[in-house]
Length: 113
Length: 117
Image (cartoon, rainbow over all chains, first blue to last red; front, side, top):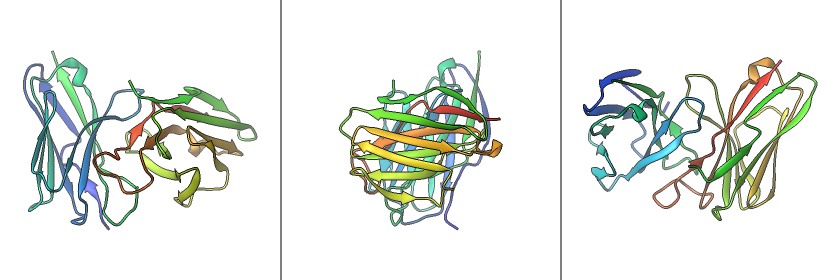
């Protein structure tokens, strides 16, 4: 079936380094993608989104890249800080699925001081 | 900070109890959602309300009963739950009850941690 998945379940990164979190999706009809950050004990927090008519979008210290050819999405965090430690989920809208989001499995980012 | 407010933050209930989870948003959003999240898993959609009407029920057992009293409030009534229903219950909202897109992003609350004993 259609799914959104992540390549790495856990990513350890040194404070100050850049982080890259990857996500593969299989629903070629999806045209909107979101990255959420979920800290321990909290709900998912919107980070950044991208539509399929774009291949790159930048926010504050974060960049999302979309490669529709290989159905790949990535989130880059610049100068990773301890507060970036969390689980990151990608999600897709699945163009034929109404207002239902399909989530990837999640990647835990651990920032080492 | 999220503008979707959920209460209570923690709830412990017995299998014969009746309790409710509450959610409120004042962003003028017309779509509200209930998700269930087990540990180390992504959120799973349960219900969607669009313009105060139930538009999606993901085959959720009847022991979970949603209610949308008005466009700002969403409740989840719980009765005769099982221990396996213990999870984080997330409320979310979006501008409209149609496909998620830029300008119609889904925003989540902090969740209610439910333990069924």
